[in-house]
Amino acid sequence: MTTSLPTAPEGGNLPSATWLVRKGVRLAAAFAILAVVAVIVTVSACSGIAPHAGQSSAADLETQAQVADKVLVCSFCHGPGGRSVWPAFPRLAGQQRDYLSAQLKAFRDKTRTDPPGASINMAGMAAYLSDAMIAQLAAYYSAESMTPSSAQDLAGVAAGKNIYEQGIRDKIPPCLTCHGARAEGSGTTPRLAGQRRSSLEHQLASFAADTRPNALMHKETMNLTAPQISDVAAYLAAQ
Image (cartoon, rainbow, N blue to C red; front, side):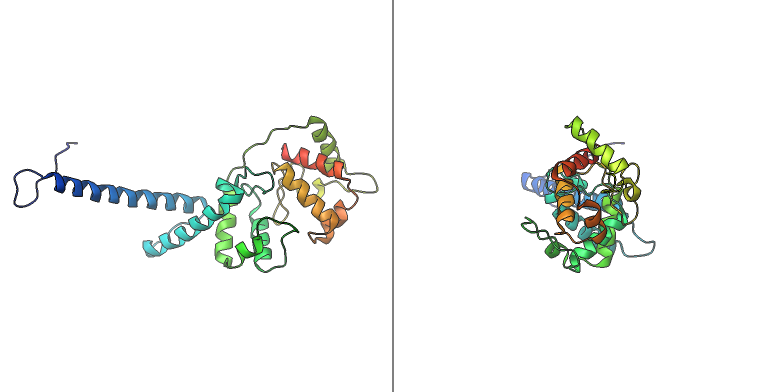
């Protein structure tokens, strides 16, 4: 491969400084456009979105750009790729696809409401999401890998493991009955393994107090004490 200097514009033997600057600006703009397109394509690939044969690439990029915009908005609370770094916000990465779809639709349709004192209005965030966009977001986050957590409270992890696997006689059934031996969930049953401890504590306490309405989960958690909730959350966060 050979590299040649740019030819001079018409009317001159050597390229002027102004012409070279303009040439450089045009090349920089072209590279910038290619970089933006590459980012959009990367995000859409993770979202499970691929161009259909024979369709306009411009239309495909418009859809991909819309998904990328939504992912960016979600990242402000749930972190890049859904790997939340804020204790209060759940991790979306690696979550069950059907669960994510169901919860986004519930927020949009106001069948799931934000808990009292919530800092983010999820109902408002999801209000204008179409079914297609929800499906694309769910596909994106479910395909992302979750960042492993480390156990910080070994005693709590051990106690929580016992409750999760064996339950509490005559009070609490084993959690693994629904959420699986490894707490990975299935379908519309959420993955709990690797979630933020504070987020899990908040959700379990909300189910127990019935401030997040769910008849089954209220029955499962209503007899848990605050320390027991904390132990179960510690165990799940460490997985």
